[in-house]
Image (cartoon, helix red, strand yellow):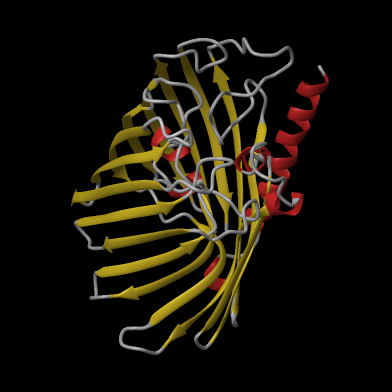
Amino acid sequence: MRRSAEGCRAGWGGVLVLGLLLSLPSRSAWAGPVQLDGLADLGLVLDTSGNKGAAGDRRVAGLTTQVLDRLPVINVVSLGARLTLGGFHARLALAWGNGINVLHTPNPVWPTPSPAWRYFLEAYAGYTVPVGRGLTIDAGIFPSYIGYESYLTRDNWSATHSWLAELSPFYQAGVRIAYPLTRRLNLLVLWLNGWNLIDQDHGFRSGGAQLAWNADVVSAAVNLFIGPARPGDLRHVRWFGDVWARITPLKFLQFAVSVDAGIDPRPDGAGNDTWYGVEAYLRVKPLSWYAASLRAGLYDDTDGGLLSGLPQRLSEVSLTSEFSVHFWTVRLEARVDRSTGAKFDGQTGRELFVLSWVGGF
């Protein structure tokens, strides 16, 4: 009963925060070198697996969005600012909510991180050097370059994340260098602290790269990550690749596909853990205020269960209806998950029904 009351209070608190955010002017109304932005992401989810976990545990297994079953939750509330002074720029975005707590849940195998980091979405500064087309260097905490989906579901087509997104980094800490090779082709090189880590290693032994193409009809990216990423093991190197492409043949129609694959040597020298996944997306937007999206994916972690927690093959299908007016968006989503293991509170499947309300400025 106490958890239920707390969840309801959190939900109504989120409604008030959302109202405050929507009452503020749009980004274009802010003049000067500082640009402000805010976001409120609220959710309610019904999990048919029935919460067969520990007594009183209402967490929806495996997700970083709408993480409590049958309780209204504040998924994410964030406030950010960007400062631009000539070639110098800085970005800070702080956040709070159930989704943020899950995102920054400490891995007990790594050294305990500073609890202050759990409130950070972005915190970096950089400078654009006037060389050629402009060489941009940033250092700090920034969203991950890997994958098609963003942690902030406002920027995605679905109210929840795919398994491909959930099991790859949402953020990283380090240094990134970006350079536009042409008007549409961009190169990104990164020196990173690790795989979804901020201060739990301090080794900065990892690296990454991205080659991205951006155009009206076709956009695509090839992403690479190399470095120690297995908890407690800094000697062995993970090799990971991600490729995604989006096609917009018509103004109201979009297709996308994303593929991941990785290999990680086992510390005992007994071979490697390997995994792969694929996700397909379809989005139709016949009206300015309405869109429908279909997403289907497969994630194979049967070799060792390193990424998903146990040897299994995960599959997921999601159907989402989206209604948008001004600064807010309501999504209704039906999702079906299946696993060859007991992933979902001791069960091999579940059906989720999600109501998501996102707004901001």
